[in-house]
Figure 1 (cartoon, helix red, strand yellow):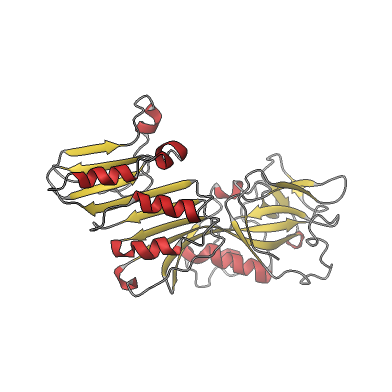
Figure 2: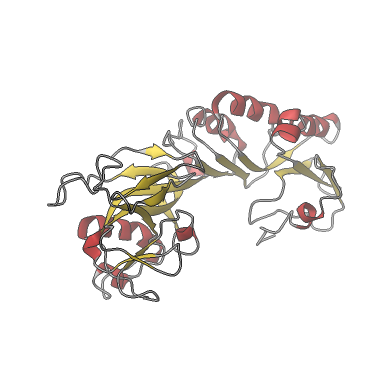
Amino acid sequence: MGNKTFTNPNETHQVGPPGKTKTYISPDGWTRYGFKVLGKYQDGNAWLHPFKDPGNWYRAFHGTGRAQAVDFGNDKQSFEKQYAPVDAVASIFENGFRPARITVHGDGVYCSPNPKFPENGYVATVELDTQEGKKKFKCMLQVAVNPDAVRFTKDKDIWVAPNPEDIRPIFLELESIEYTIGNCHLHIKDLPWPSTLTHLSIIFDYDGYFDRIQRSLVHLSSLNSLEIYQKEKGTLLPNGQLWENLIHSSLPLLKIFKFYFQFEYSSQLSNQIEQVISWFSTPFYVLKNKWFIRCDIPDRYHGRAILYSLPFSFQIYTTFQGSIIKTILTLLDDDNNDFYTNIFSNVKKL
């Protein structure tokens, strides 16, 4: 079945037998990758193909974020918890579903017609080592459920298939990638992302990566959310004009842009800070997208500053012990108390 990135939050379809169809809600912000399931089952393909055939089964979603060793049929087998969600996807495709361990709504396999519901504790992020470095993936399954066998519960977001044979995996849904670049990857010339990617987070420590990072984004026209986090102090000034030009030319769907840059500046050239602020103060940032920034400049660490998007979106913030920090913001609405109160709500480590 075809791969596809979903970018319309209002896309719905009616699927199932005439007279008892159910609403299929497309998983906005996710990219699907199809399994080879046509011809796999003895009852033909009408349960899935062509789309909207009267014989189509209902569409739903299933998270594997709570997978345990017992879910693979052998609770004594070698088990690595951090990879369990991905291993569970492979196991389900090869061997089919197993009944749920926790059966609040009765025995069977649980799923949801609401693609957002599995994210409430049933979808996990997995970090994998790849040839290009560490990447983080968040995934869930899109499934087909037999209309004649599914049990609807009092909770509209929970369906149960009493018989595992009445629920089938059809797509793997990929929501985001987090990529960490270290000094060991200096030799990498290109960063090949899936062209259908919608969410991307890049963590790096050397600002010499800027060119290749920006170059790697020019083909991601479906990108909806981008996070850039610089772990170490760099020598290049954060250039908001370059990012603005890139977004204008290559990222038409980008709605969320979060960043954190540590950089050196010349204490003899006060206009350098002014230049950085001006790059991120254009109508494109402040008026069109409402992407506000804050720049922290400590008095005891001359020549060093931190620039980041608001509200602060990352878990680690660098502090300057014993310093009085001069702060510059592009957000001037002091009446927005909720915004100011929650600026650092995500920080877990200083």
